[in-house]
Amino acid sequence: MKVKKSDVKQESSLRKAVKNVKQILKKKKVEPKVEVIKKVIKQGKDLRRKTKIPVGIVYIGHIPHGFYEEQMKDYFSQFGKVTRVRVARSKKNGRSRGYGYVEFAHPEVAEIAAKTMNNYLMCGRLIKANYIPPEKQHKRYFMGTNWSVKNYAKLTRRRKEIRSNRNLNLNKKKDKKLVERYLTKLASIERKLKTKGIEMKITPVDVPEVK
Image (cartoon, rainbow, N blue to C red):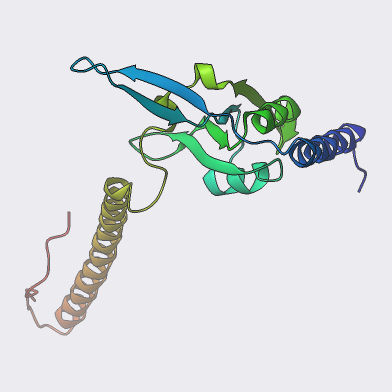
C-alpha cells in the first residue's frame, strides 16, 4: 500500500504542531490570564469583582461521518486539555449537521490547533478549522445537550414505533399467506369430495378476513 506524500506531509505538520504546543506550555508555563470585570451595583457604591478565565474555542466544519463528540475530544486532546466539545445536531433526528466546536483550556493551544487542522484531509473530507478568540466568544456555541439516548428520548421512542409498525405489517403479510394457504386446502378438500359425489361446503371458523 502506497502512502501519499500529502498524507505524510499532513502527519508531519501535525506532529510538529503538537510538539510546539508542548514546548510552549512547558517553557512559558502558560497559565490562563485572569480578566477582571468590574460590575457597578446601582443600589450602592460597592464594586464587585468577577473573574473570568479565558479559554480558546475552535470552530470545526466539514466533520466526516463518525467523527463526533467522543472522537473529537480524543483527537484534539493531543494538542492540549480539551474542556468541552459540541457537535451541532438536528433536533428531529439527532444527526450531525457537519460542524461543531472544541473548547481548549488555553487560547494559545486552540490557535495552534486551528491553524494545524484547517484544510486537513480526514476520511475524504477537508476539515475547516477557525480559531475564535475570547473577545468574540458567546454562550450559544455550547447551548443545549450533547447526543445521548436519554437526551433524545423522543427520537428513541419514534424509532421503536417505526420498528413496531414494521413488524406489525410483516405479521399481517404472514397471516395473510397462512389464511390463503388454509383456504386453498379447504377448496381442494371440497373438490375431492365432489368427485366422490359428496356436495359439502366447508365454512372456516375464526379465520381473519383477507384484504
